[in-house]
Length: 171
Image 1 (tube, rainbow, N blue to C red):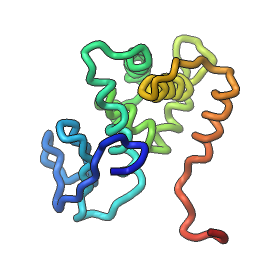
Image 2 (image 1 turned 90 degrees about the vertical axis):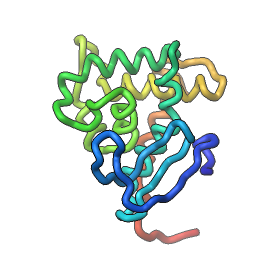
Image 3 (image 1 turned 60 degrees about the horizontal axis):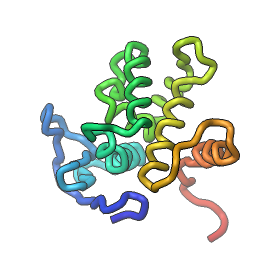
Image 4 (image 1 turned 90 degrees about the horizontal axis):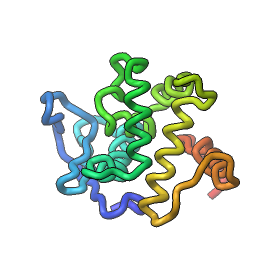
């Protein structure tokens, strides 16, 4: 297991295919066993790892029969933005929408350029607030609104989450 993923396990399998369409994939998340499966037959990339990790920490909340408010907000955002997403993988389902939001820089940039309902806040920002509130709920914390010091820190931490360089000076 990896810290931050709860009890989710990571396993490696050769020639991993999507059970829905039979196509080879870099990875997938199996909610029934809480396991991220990585295809050892293809090179592992950061997008795949982040994407499947996003499923591991959010899919159980999305699947609840009575979802928390943050999931309802994400569903509303997803439904509103869906016509603007075209054929992008994030348009497949709410689960994929959230996983692509967390793992795909191009998808994030696309969402960052979309504002709906005449609001000044972009879809990307609205999604961020909804996801933060899911994580806060899971940790037993109350939801928060934009504009707090914590919000400023959250934004900055998200902004510095980038792949590490191939090398750097220091320990």
